[in-house]
Length: 253
Ligand SMILES: Cc1cc2nc3c(=O)[nH]c(=O)nc-3n(C[C@H](O)[C@H](O)[C@H](O)COP(=O)(O)O)c2cc1C
Image 1 (cartoon, rainbow, N blue to C red):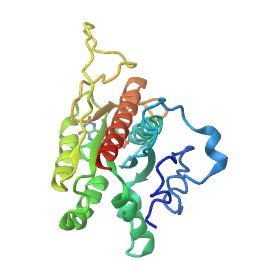
Image 2: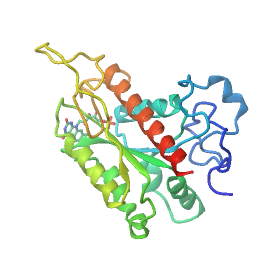
Image 3: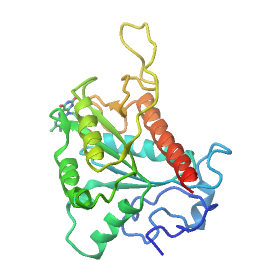
């Protein structure tokens, strides 16, 4: 039996919200065996992934909570598309002492079909804790442990640009170094003739292609930012990764 409790099942799907507090220590981090949570199952598009579950880890850093909101939006998208999701803050990896708990955490990533990476943009690049996590993945790189897994990325910054393309590029390059398969955002930029730019509700408001971008004014707490359109963009990235990963799993069978 592997890390995923239902590894051999084909018709068993995620059935409730992730218990974020206990996800890392739980023997069932994808919460597959929690009947009490079944009622809260998010709505799923019918017919999409009837027989396959994509196991998707979302690894992120967030200093003040804004990027975490984007990570949670990505998670909602994965669940809406019928995938399994687990949210993993990088701190859990960075503070790891070697031992069984640490091994279990890394094993969760190793057992995922896709990993979606997210970092805030700090000083024009990934935040330092996220970079520490990326550096720690080099042990996986040596063994090509994540080769042929799917990967995608998201970032959030204070400015409309804020040089956050560099953050996504860093994430994508790390995924390439691992031999992973990068999934782009797959959304057109908005067509807006408003000189003020697209509104806060607009999907792919910032016109990104490589991954999901969000912007949170530094004057606003995480309850108020990023705006709805950016969060929806994150959801759509999660959906896309879940759908494409499941399609790949189906074809590999
Ligand atoms: C150390 C630091 C560096 C930052 N550098 C940038 C930057 O280069 N570009 C930008 O647009 N915003 C920058 N910001 C703003 C953050 O990207 C923004 O506040 C973001 O919402 C933080 O996300 P978090 O709450 O998940 O940490 C910086 C913030 C901090 C704390």
